[in-house]
Amino acid sequence: MAEETGGASDMFGTSRSELLVDFIVSLDGFASAEGWPGWWGLEGPEYLDWLEEQPEGRYTILMGANTYRLMSGFAAEFDAAAAEEPTDEQSSIDELGRAQKIVFSSTLEGEPPWPNTRLVRGDAVAAVTEMKRSGAGPMRTMGSLTLCRSLLAAGLVDRLRLVVFPVITGRTGRERIFEGYPDVALDLVQSRTFDRRLQLLEYVPTVLPGPPGSPAA
Image 1: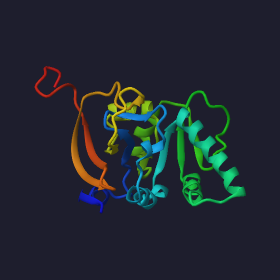
Image 2 (image 1 turned 180 degrees about the vertical axis):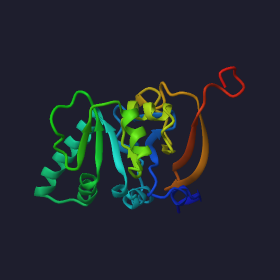
Image 3 (image 1 turned 60 degrees about the vertical axis):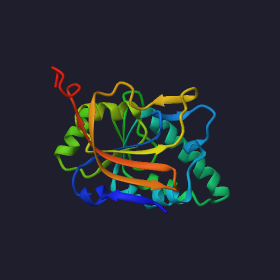
Image 4 (image 1 turned 90 degrees about the horizontal axis):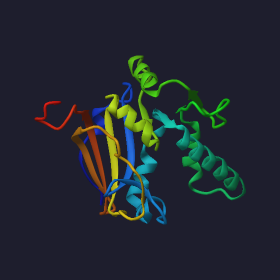
């Protein structure tokens, strides 16, 4: 059975322009590992059910160019394969296609072909600051480690949500998630256990000028 404490989903309504940064991560802080399958092969029924329940359509999804290329390419390939042999995952791909998406890039050319995607060539921090100021609605990130780091360092992130997988990939790990981050204090507002092994940890982050008690602080 899943175990849960707190209630961050109830604390934060979707009418405000909150920004959620959302990561899956190994215990030692990597986003992926060479030779390992997706989710490190440890996704279970409780976790997959929870993913299905997430209200992705209520969020505008923010991403960088690399994540956009990866995900839009994956969606196109998946659609082509599903046209021949539909699968249960098609509904998730379709929902992602229907979601409003913003990609921040100075290198992409032309209008993004993925449906409901808007390209922003300017500074992401300035753009998201204006979106939050104008009440653009709830936003969440997808992948995009550099973008997430910039938004958190600028103090724009309202919630940081991690799903921690019980593996250490010190030799094969790729994309160390928190590399280059500032010091950040984290206030735990929700936790949950999936399938007796995966840990969901949801925090309100506060960027610090330095370690507590240091001259910078």
